[in-house]
Amino acid sequence: MLAFDLNSFPSFVSHVALSITFVSAAGTLALRMCRNAEPSLRHAIALSSLAAVVSVPLFVACVYSPIVRAAFHLPTSVAVIAERSVVESRLPDAESTELETATTSSRSRPRRTKFSIPGLFATAWAIGVVLSAASVATRRVRQRQYLLRLEHVKDSGILATATKLRSETGVKRHVELLMSRHTPWPFTIGIVRPKIILPYALVRQAKQGDSSELTAALLHELCHVNRCDYAVVLFEQIVGVVVWWNPFVTSLFEELSVAREEICDSHVTHYSGSGEVLAKYLVTSMERVVDPNVMLGVGMSANQPRAVERRIKRLLSGELDLMELPSYLKAIVLSSCIVASIACVQTNYANAQFVLGPAVNLGPILNDETNSGTPTAISDDGLAFYFNFGSDIYVSTRESVNDEWRSPVAVSELNSDGLEFLRFISPDRTWALISQDTAERSQDIFAISRVSADSPWGTPQLIPEPISTAFRDSNPTMTADGLHMLFASERPGTNGGADLYEGTRASLDSEWTVENLGPSINTEFRASHPMMTDDGLMLFFGSDRPGGYGDIDIYMSSRATVNDPWNDPTNLGPNINTPELDNGAVFWEEGNVLFFRSFGHGGQGQDMYMASVVPEPSTTSLALCGVMISAGAIRGRRK
Image 1 (cartoon, helix red, strand yellow):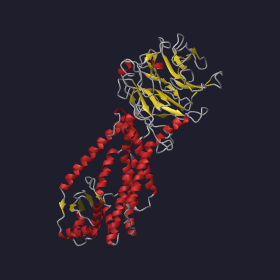
Image 2 (cartoon, rainbow, N blue to C red):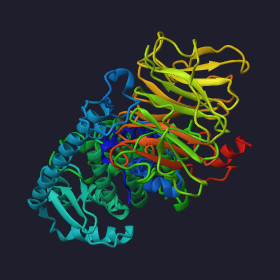
Image 3 (cartoon, rainbow, N blue to C red):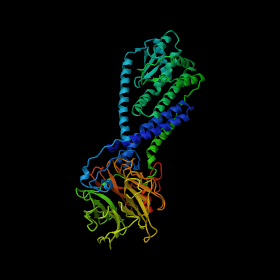
Image 4 (tube, one colour):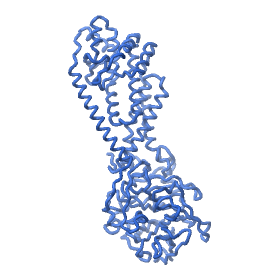
């Protein structure tokens, strides 16, 4: 069963729309390139493209479904347009602390709903579907009433001719012949019990002794019956109801209709030996008006002037297309279009670097009514887990990575009346970086140390400018060698409310130099809670930038070396991010596990979660398109 959060429905619809547009445009382009090809090939391309259009929602649903994605190990990085909400905080300075507090009262905070382009598009799409469906249903009722008013053809000569042609063309189903005084075009309706509606003038002409045009028309319509083209027409109409807004899909309908008619024209030429009679009838019929009540019929009702002119030329030239594409070729065309739709869905995976499985709640010991908070750091051995509850630092330990976490305790020597974060701890757990409120200003960055992993922490030592400034500087994270530090700051020169900065130094005794991470990471929207891996090549952070799943999402970026700029960030996808707040990412490299906090995974409000890297062979890529690093490659990078 496919399952995804209904709150992300606008994002789902937007992604489906983009994918459908891509696939239908590719099909239209292929048809334009094959304009002079045989009708059978063009018909197969058009029909396969529509099949791919229909398959797109299924693949996008897989992207949005943790169950399906986990089963097939599909990537979780997908960039879609989503509605964003502003997080409200209990602290007085809401603008500067909205991403850094986790309180019990925030679990039940009111949320402000904003109108978004995806939401408005989803609404307009739904309204259009309802109106289109109502229009089709109305015309179907009128068509039914129209058929009830028609007379059955009772002329024995015409019935005998129809029976003979059915036998010659291999049509085994019984076909009813009806006649109408209001349409000049023969057309076919029905699948199990097909009906061919003949113009009254054509029947009268046959009764007067000239049955050549009637024979050509019946051959054409019996070809439609034999090919079950009416089922294809119904399929087109259903797709048209759902994708009423897409001009490329409409173009596919037109190309499919023209190819279908040309195929049946070829059969008329084959059986009668000439296409002149049918061509003459087409010229005569073009001067008349088609009954608007005739809908969903298949046959000569596809009467666009250019298409009919082309058909007439083909009939007079004697061109034939009796080729039926082999099954394997049809399968190739269909699968190619479906792969194109998958590639469209996977387009945004190109920058993803690993696959994360579903979010798992850390359990009642860490997420009870009083101790759910924000992950901040984990030791390299995975035995000490630091997180914030409210404004204080807590730690939970365990004997081994296979044991349960113990009840957390407050790190009393570091906690004060202000806000503290322990965001980085050294591999030997003897020194760390924290950000802390001071009496003079909000959030400076400090270094702390201790004698051993089991000893109390010493007095925090301020890291002066250019790291700590008169403005808010928080959430420091560092490489294992101590030469590169990332942190969030609200100092002058930021692009938004808070930007991410990197401090570098040549040695442990050298002075720091600080540089903004630039527009690929920092936008006019906030960036917070940076977490850098020990080698300085991967970065996780939270942002409320557009293009996420709503509220604050977790993003990641990478770089080839510590001297290279960071790549454009990638959203970690719906396994991690929800329409609610998701932030506080901590990546434990040794265990290939991401810890984070979220309001949107069904916990007690804000709970802490973990998501493991899905195991994949280290020798192969994890994505159908784009370059990805497997879990084995991540482990190998640390050796």
